[in-house]
Length: 375
Image (cartoon, rainbow, N blue to C red; front, side):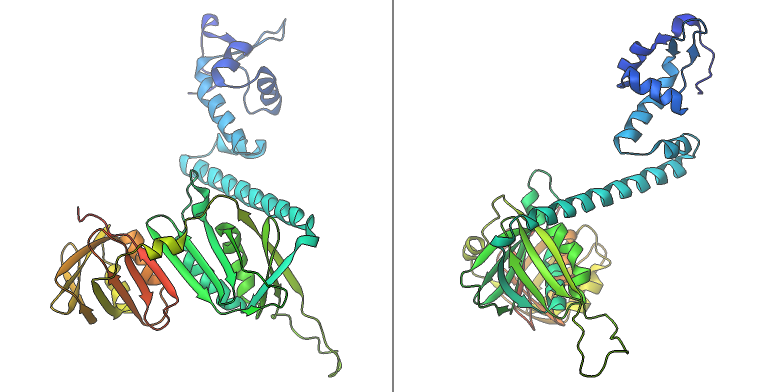
């Protein structure tokens, strides 16, 4: 159906009536007419009044939606002549641009706010950048993008005399990772806050190439100060001259909502009734064929993964009486894929209590995974 479809005068409506039906203003309709993206069906030659037909409502509605996502008019022109697949691509590209712009604005605003409280900047500790990047990646698998509970998209960062602890949870999983850090002389008190997971994720590429990262706390941000070790030395420098590495600083926003207390949760767990030690690689390989839910059976000292059409016996050991615990693939797989070392330990409690997944070679990465019903 085109905008030039023949209609009778009685079927035409005024610009005001059409604007109300389309959810647009009359000034917007005049603008879109002048821009050539939504012409009136008829313009009275004597009065200049614009008239529209009901058949134009679909185009007008889509135009309003496209403007709502910020699509520029030249692209909108292409949208209305594109195939469905091409139009979908144009929408995706616009959303990607808008998301990038929103992130850039948010980061600029965060840096601006951080600059307002320079006097309150508090150095905390220093840690190896690649190690911190790996830890962030490991715990981020347990975050959630939940508009109703934005704090679940954050990572709880705690700095004390023992080092740095990172914790994340989506209410179905909880991951906690502890790192050894060099405490700075000025960091005489423990510090804890919930840090934006998105900001930490955006910082990992810089963290990975920085041998050392200094953490500093402000009122609204956790600052990560890095030295770039990838700069090529200047061959024109004399042997006794030094070149200061380029410094980078990124500001990660602090979230103000209360974060679930991991110490209370961990202390409330019942003692494990079963312990399973298996090879991580074999476990993950078997899960590649898994459906939405998988069963883990412990019987006679053996551990078996239950799939729809087969059972896979896993190499390793297990203790405890016969039991089968079911898990959602989307909660179990990330816990295993981020484990450290070649083996993992799973501590089971019952069919409806959290299971603990620990790295057998390095027990400071711990993930709690909730079981599910088998059907």
